[in-house]
Image (cartoon, rainbow, N blue to C red; front, side, top):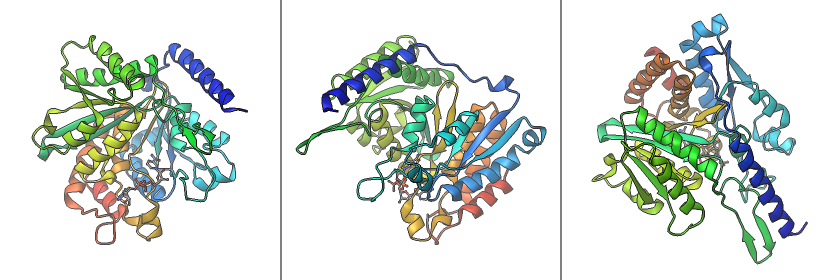
Amino acid sequence: MTYIQDFEKIITEQLARVERMKEGEAFADFEHMDKIVIGVIDGDGIGPVIVREAQRVLEVLLKEEIVSGKIELRQIQGLTIENRIAQNATVPAEVLAEIKACSVLLKGPTTTPGKGDNLPNIESANVTLRRELDLFANVRPVFIPEKNIDWVFYRENTEGEYALGSRGIEISPDIAIDFKVTTTGGTQRIAKAAFEYARANGGKNVSIVTKANIMKKTDGKFLDLCYQVAKDYPEIKVDDWYVDIMAANLVNEQIRSNFNVFILPNLYGDIITDEAAQIQGGVGTAGSANVGGKYAMFEAIHGSAPRMVADGIADYANPSSILKAAEMMLRHIGQAQKADKLSDALQAAQAEKSMTGDSSGETAAAFADCVLARL
Ligand code: NAD
């Protein structure tokens, strides 16, 4: 197949995706579900260490619902780098079927082979899951009350540079081209989610972050559409920034407290939220929600930390990230009181335990014990 045929195939697939989006979302109704199944996925590297602790905490918090059969914590095996390589699949079909039988997911980080890893070029499991489950909103809160910081990032999760991340074309040995995709439906739904959150939380400011001065077609469209959606929320103050200056703004103590809600295309959202998490105390402190209509997946914002495993310090990984994700999950399934309880216990444990990420600090298990003691 020539690269022109490759390109045609990509365009046809993307146009079909646009048509599918027009059919709209089927939203999960947790209040009326007979049983909520929480799929628990260990992941790779430090994943099993932190997920084990989150499971322990959830088993205590949801004891009554688990006993009554209203909620099930269901372990899902097989989303490991070893199995994915063995099956040469980003998400093996039987694992995907099990995932789709759950109502929500709590997922540990999964390894994606990179250049130089000497592993098959398998696509990121996360990118596949976000696409397969249409988890279009990646919501990442960063909260530092003592610095007057209360940020929530709405990162578009299915498009941008990630939609076709593994489908770039090596035209010749001298030139490679990747693709970036922005659609009307894809942008409107993330913008709407961010503005709805801003409205529901007391009219917080919304900042749109792009590089529309350079990526004129894709980011230009994203910016225009966000402003169009903003017209339905006249009470909300909106501004827009280029991603480079926003990276600087977040470390500018004079102005950073003015920001509340951010809307970002996929790649900028990925990068800027790691910066924000670092300001909060490191990626090990930050959780995220990947939300679609029917499905939602909750996880730490960080990766599988292979160097911690290689250095023999995986047990010292900070489980705050996945516990924060568990808190967001509880809120999503309508267990707000339990989420508040977990949030308070988590904050108390963070004040008490020093999580340095190595043997000079506490282990994940000791941290979770502290959370459990404060529930
Ligand atoms: P990483 O997030 O795994 O690690 C970055 C740094 O943060 C490292 O120094 C690590 O030790 C530290 N760190 C991460 N989590 C921590 C925790 N809970 N407690 C203490 N310290 C922690 O980033 P990376 O090294 O770029 O990626 C490793 C692998 O993870 C790659 O294969 C990547 O593709 C994958 N990844 C997966 C996800 C996901 O599944 N959501 C997200 C990002 C990266």
